[in-house]
Length: 133
Length: 133
DNA sequence: GATGTTGCTGCAATACGTTGCAATAACGAC
DNA sequence: GTCGTTATTGCAACGTATTGCAGCAACATC
Image (cartoon, rainbow over all chains, first blue to last red; front, side):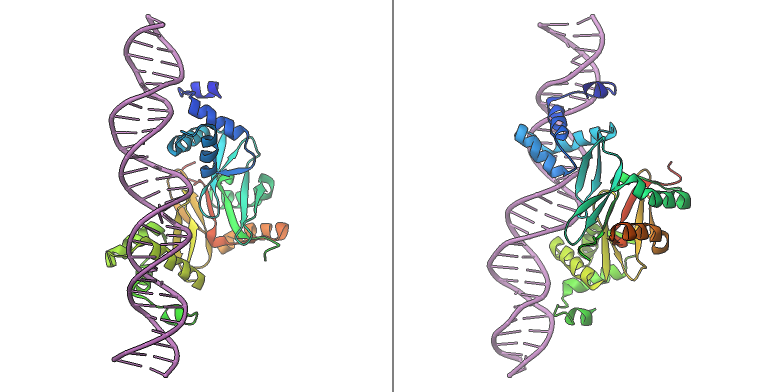
């Protein structure tokens, strides 16, 4: 991590180390708020702005990706999960991932029809799941 | 409008009238904040909570639909536009609509594969448009 | 027109994120 | 180890959206 930051002229600070540590223990999706909270557990003096700014940096480095839940709140996931989209059930609140394979037809349709390059990991589709219908 | 509210035991208030007026003059997509602002132009004493709560009511009635922009903020659109999804270019900020026809393959894929009923009007897909690639 | 119900409003507080700015501290060079 | 540069931090303020609650006012009824 330190190397990757330095390679871009960025710095390796205690606050960034803390967030990276938290992320390394994180599985699946987390909201920004949860990450802030977890950083605070490690270091109560953590401030939200630092965490969110660090997340931006890590996203540029490709370490994390973020999308938005059905309520529009940030959701981060840590790589190197395969790229995937998200499915949310409005009724039960359940969430699933859409694999790149499964999304292939979606991506292809927008690509060939409009020349639009879908950022799959930022996609969240809301609706109702089989059980809730 | 008044009839539709009364039919459900709801009330037709000056604040609701103001929002409906604003909406009737609105084309395309608007953020919640913009709607609050426009209501304030009509009546400076308007408060955000009332506007957002009224929007919820109107959504239940099917008058408006909301989704989230690429930054997760609310975006409303007024019916009776046909149901459609949204496409956002991360680079230029442009936005387009995805017609139900164009989305048919997406909807069908998730429907048959997972039994998931997509709420198309709540879908926002982020990526890069043809010009920005 | 007066009255009772109860849906609505406005306020205040809270949550989640973002941004400007001055002070700090990481880092490279000596 | 010291010093200078400048990326980062922490603070404070702001923007957007939600929620609890007490008082208000729409509406139906009389």
